[in-house]
Length: 193
Length: 193
DNA sequence: CTCTGAATCGGAGGGTCCTCCGGTAGAGTG
DNA sequence: CACTCTACCGGAGGACCCTCCGATTCAGAG
Image 1 (tube, rainbow over the protein chains, first blue to last red):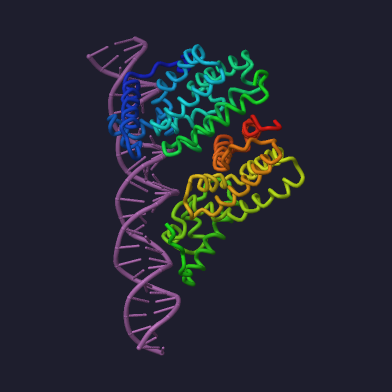
Image 2 (image 1 turned 90 degrees about the horizontal axis):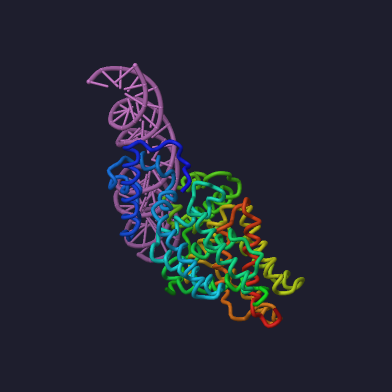
């Protein structure tokens, strides 16, 4: 990661930040119902004010908590492209994404934050996602199975929409159908379609 | 599940309900920032408890407030189908929908409520929307310009996703591109595609 | 008109979110 | 080691959401 923080965090601030992240990951993972930020701060042994200074919004906290796992999903792209035709790789990757969201319910918040952050340099996860989608689209364009005139940006937004509209486990099959529609849209008028 | 509201509302209850709806429509329409339910109740001259009895959630209130306008959008379908080929009519209708959402920001909440209400018989707007989409899909299938194997349900969910993912005025152009993708997905492998 | 049961009213209250700012503790300097 | 200045800590507080239940009002029967 490029150093956006000129000044290194003070020792106690660094410690608190790590405590908060650990508490957030645990809370998001193990939880059934609601996760209150107060509870996370208490678990981390810091005040609520400290939590908000490090993570100004609930989404920022969620994004930070899930950054690693998002990165893992993005890193799976080359492997998918090696074993499947590009359009099917795209479909499989989107599917995996939604699957992941369905199990980690709270990550939907993280995704929304990433999407909504437009050009915000603060969201580094966004760059990774765009990179993954770009790789898939480029491979599809090269093979002629996906159209070449689509922005990675828009695919990401569409993915966000699918997860928001049908992100629950209960609607997992609907999410699948929406992804089918999306990928068919990506195939439309592709040279080798 | 088939419990019907046979009993007419008591006179005061009916009066209060109307006051609440009027206040909500005004608040949602004229507002710039946040709309607090407390304020709506106060404007309507009733207590907050009464508001929640009539409209159990914020979304229910929004849905009721916008029901008429949603209905107007749905009623525009025959006219569109009369003047455009079905696939273009579909595209135009979706566009009009997003346009409307972009101007009346709070209606996004209503739409989400309608979508999320799954099989809830309480949401009568949902039936209208499904009807409108069904008409468009059927016309497209008959003309051969839209595939015949898509559920109106899924199109509604996709529309919801687009509006949630790119519902702001700022992202109006992105919403348009997402709708293009969606409609192309609907065209994919259509007989006359 | 009076009575009575049932439905409605309405606000107090518990919980969460997020902000603000006085107090405090870290880190560099002599 | 002492000192200072800066950045950080943390909880009180205001706003909002939604629930719960005693008080109140309606409407039909006698």
